[in-house]
Image 1 (cartoon, rainbow, N blue to C red):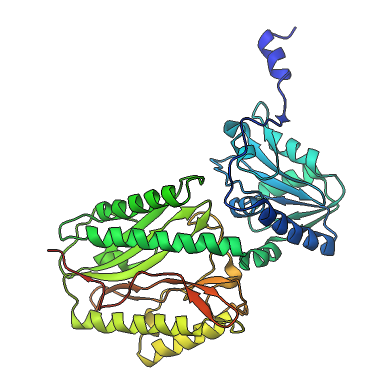
Image 2 (image 1 turned 60 degrees about the horizontal axis):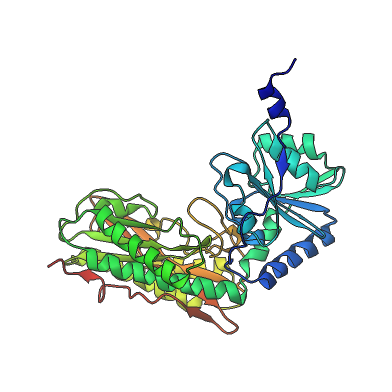
Length: 412
């Protein structure tokens, strides 16, 4: 005989739908989301794909408006010829519905694999299924075979990345706003630089200024994930080195990095600075990196390939005997991405990327040289601007000044 607790458990649903409250104002219009889905469905039709299961944070957000917080749980968005449905965990209840422009199904954790049961209700068995192969785990792949039983599986990750690489007018407006907010964070950081001040204190000043600006300029957005990396001295040797409690000293090289996040969209400002003064060896390296930065900006236009831009900057560094100190490619795409999700790898300024730039693409130019400790001019040097590719060139949407004339900061 079953206990009352067991009976109650058996009556609980595996998944359900629930609209709690009113829809939130999303970062883009319904027309924008419809256009994105139309392009995806055109791809599906051409490849004879009956359903696509999106599982990454960036693609779920791009097509639905909802940016999930996984915390170890699976999330997804199922797109068919006539439907778009996010699949979310019960712990979020109806927030995913409020933050989606489309339908939503909530799965419960009363028993294992309810996520896959919910997804299987949205996808017909024995059909062709599109997936993000660069995001799914081996375990998820087995669950797909077991619960969805597709006749054929096709990876669509590269194709939909290429769709995301061309930004709409609405996206460019949001990215431009983000670039301006990154500048605001940069100004707050510059004012906070003092000898004896800790990196973390300077970083918090920049982050707080950006979050205040986002709350004022984008009052309907979710305030989440904006951050600052502010490094000094040896901590500047890596672009993604975390903030520490190291105190600033006179003559220190500094790396300012502000990253406002608006509805999943990342923008950035990155600058080299020095405290009080810059020695002649450091100045020589800094000026070389600025020259590379300006060369890169001058090259961005429709029709040029990413690896051609890379080759030109490589030649400049080679002529100055500095190419061996380059640490990564010279730029990347912008859009739905952060330091823990998203990447439009087909639009990076590297030797192995031959993508042709087109109007509507948004890229950075960000050369970086790292000189090891013990060598003259030791430290990491990096400048970073965001460029919108136009019909006849590019538009620089970063306003914060760069170079020795502006960024040797007096700490008195």
